[in-house]
Image 1 (cartoon, rainbow, N blue to C red):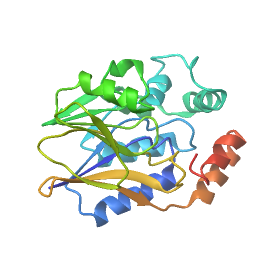
Image 2 (spheres, helix red, strand yellow):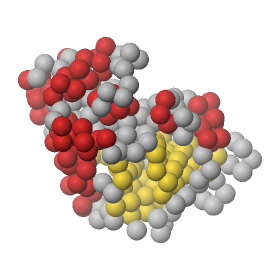
Image 3 (cartoon, rainbow, N blue to C red):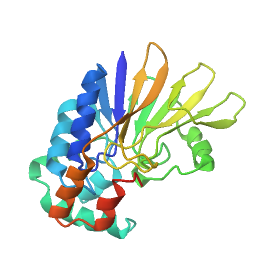
Image 4 (tube, helix red, strand yellow):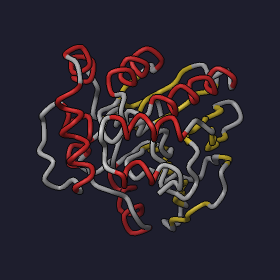
Length: 242
């Protein structure tokens, strides 16, 4: 069995379509969505529909939460808040109905799926450094916690000794004596310096997790964002993966 995990699409239809094609080429048995279907990008309705069609499980992200009016955007930066204003005024009723059924977390055997953090998932904490990562292991009991939110892929593992280590490899073989915190990266707005979409493949039989990068038509997305007047900063950052 091979599972795919993807997150942070942010209404980037070009990126999502490219990844779905890649899901099929990888012959994934199931795919799981870890939140933030909307925000930043120009195609929220289309992306939510596609995510709902392809994903076995759909999680709620903070931008989805805001789009549903379940939280204010006070802590969003000005560009995120501006794009969310457009999103809320543009999405259809069908889209809100679909997103309303998204879950905050999901247990998949020995894997916990969550958008932001296993600590108070509804408060959207960021895991930005090794101190955050180390603390996170105290908030889940499963072998693996998979998440998104920061748009930066990584694997952190915890030894039996309690030491936590950041892996610099795009592919990691899981071992019985370790627990793992895995950020699956972002489909629609990577922020690790690589503008290509990123999602995660978990080959269960081989016990391997692998971050997969997928190229998409960035210029087409930028053009569509400009047409609806989204901020230049959001448009330009796509090309540099920041």
